[in-house]
Length: 126
Image (tube, rainbow, N blue to C red; front, side):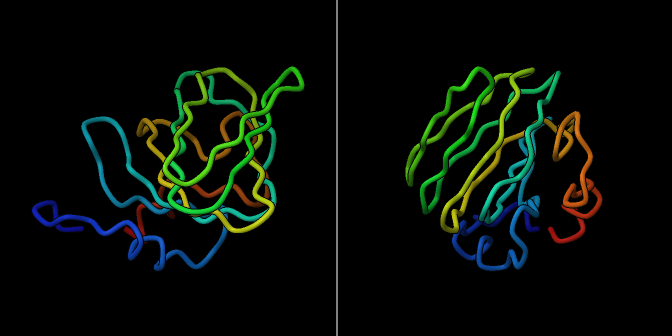
């Protein structure tokens, strides 16, 4: 990652080979900038101390929220899941996203499942 060169989001997304496996492509102070491809659903979880921003590059993402609520976001839109809110991202078709998260944000928050990706693996591919 060259800090003095622009990042090309579509190229960064093209380098992602596994769904639900965020890849760190930048850092702004204490926030990571990540790209990921999503398909299917992840897992219900919450980040107790951090907000999480989803910016859609392509596709249509549905984020289920606690209390039988949900939000739909599409290319060019973003949504911030407030800290402590249980949520579950769902993608009927492949979605390319940019995530903005604190460096302390765990991939699946308060839940660890088989698909949980530790930050070391997210950084290794950067």
